[in-house]
Image 1 (cartoon, rainbow, N blue to C red):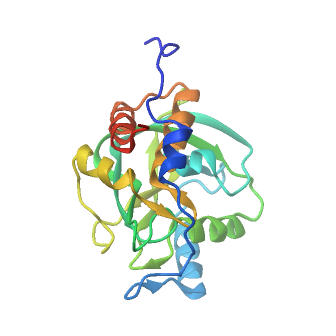
Image 2 (spheres, rainbow, N blue to C red; image 1 turned 180 degrees about the vertical axis):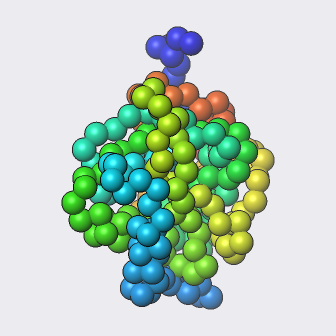
Length: 231
């Protein structure tokens, strides 16, 4: 499929129109933060269940990890995760959402498939890398994004990779929302890290740059641009 003529509807001008200066007021009331002991337990659990500790560790990125991986990596390649799909199913009242302008962020729900990027992590100090990564991916209890080892297909064959999937028992789980409802939220969402529109734009842009076209996200950016408008 020729992608050279494909032009995004959502632009930096749309993002600027939604942006507001939001102060980080911390976790909303009623949400318990993960502790150092919690993170240590998760890191130990994931390391102990590593399916191939004698081979390079792979991290599968499907959203903001693609364009802001946070941790070092030696190389990247494309991959397909079958049985899981991107979904704006994670409610946020912090980061890219706030109590005044709540947001939605992506996680993975079961069903379908997902193209993404595999990052090969350095062999040294994997424990420290996981500590940093986990603090980025989940902050409250119960956990929102569960670190899980799953098989990802690549041009070189299947590999086991660390993937973050949605905990559907989390109070932040929004369910399987229709795209129109997601667009309404993203067209207004803003937190101290930025807007939901910018989060969507960055993800679609980075996927397209790697030749990965997600029809659902493409339609969503059209809907968000329509709702923000530039008149």
